[in-house]
Image (cartoon, rainbow, N blue to C red; front, side):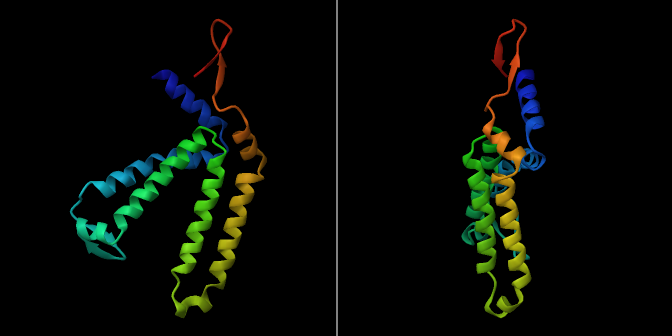
Length: 158
């Protein structure tokens, strides 16, 4: 157990700050899934209180489970230094921005220029951080397992 805790601690220390944040909050994805599967008394959708059945009928349960799985998957991918995680994070950022713009009503389309500029900036910043920032690039390019020299002088994986 102590070896696992040490490995997690060492791995987190090596991560760039924002990747560390995403990894630490990733267990919240499991909690999201559980919150969708365990029938609570009521749920809230768009400010309205709905029952468990209505929550699932509206698509809230499916979206919650998909979102929770995505959050957990991203955390594991970052922890295990899987390069495809960078593409997944970028796809999530771009997709949520596109969906937000699609949800804007016709009456509000003239008023979204500021939001559109912000979305473009956020997408560009995300791509730069994930693919061009030196610390993030080197984190994903380094060895997947944290190495440490043991008592016998032989490297072993924690």
